[in-house]
Amino acid sequence: MAIESLQQLGAVFLSPVLTYFNQHLLARRPTQRPLFFLAREGYWLEHAFKRYATAKGCEVDTRYMLVSRAFLFKIGIVKPATYSYSLNFTFSGSLHELMRSRYMLSDTKIRQVFSEKEFSQTLTLPKDFDKVAALLEAKIPQLTPIITASSDAYYQYLTTLGFFDHKCVDVVDIGFGGTIQTLLSLIYGLDTLGHYFIAPNPGKRQCGTSSVSMQGYLKEGVKLGEGYIPLDRSMFLEGLLTAPEGQFQDIRLSPLAHRTFDYYYGRKVASQQQFHLLKAVCEGALHQLESFAQQDITFSQREVELLYTRYVTKKGLFPSHSWPLFEIDDDIASTGTVNGIDFFGLKV
Image (cartoon, rainbow, N blue to C red; front, side):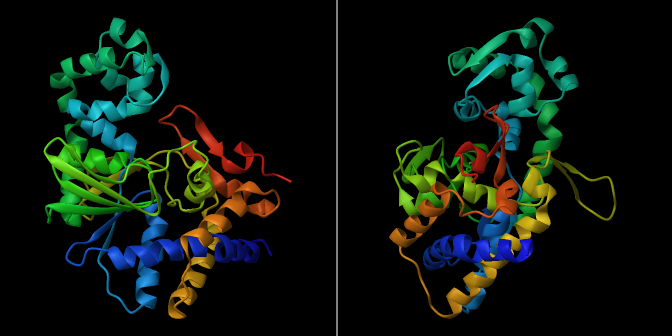
């Protein structure tokens, strides 16, 4: 009964959202370039898009791409242009703690770069932004050899995906700030076009020598905390559209003959530990999405907003055995694990 209930949840709650997103993405996709679906939500977004396109009789070129803000913060630490993004999260603690949590450097690596006096100092962000940015920039010669193995392997990984085959790269994600997209443009000097469910900062802007364009298919120009429920309570969507692995944290060239890369992931949250339950929700959604596509059933913006808002603001609409699936990690912002059901008080 639990599996059937979860499949129904996917069909009723998730499938209209995915159908709306994919009907717009299919219509506005590039015809000569692939779509890169960004981890972690990109795992199910790619599955859904391919399923929808097949049902519509369309051929599409998609690539699932391992990436995370934390990993890009790490390999971007030698590029000062990225500091306005990696240091733009509230933090209070020692430099040592910042280097471990924000840049994923090991204790050994931190001690190679910083003196004990430096890594023991207490910092507060964003107040100490200039101080930290200046220190990191001064340490670039020492930081470069530490991140080289990761950055070189990742460049090779992106090359195998065809990431550098076109001057403009199309990326797909739920949203919302476009930090990953912006960091990719800054680090690799490529123009990027982001396809998002919601885009708080739509339009085109210049980042260094590259342009970053963002478009949102459900809503554009809304900010977190302004009362737009699909954005303010987006963690419900993020929770259900998560990959089976934890946060992507590192990549290295593999010493083994049968594979090219070794991948490293962070801890798993409840939904990933019980991925068979999450899979039931998403498979129910994809099966219904396929049916909608075959029957040419579409959804309006208003319909999706009303449906989503009703579910994430009313108690009792999510079955109790689905509650653990809404857990997401927010380690970058130093808030640990957050569950939308608890955070918004939706338990009956």
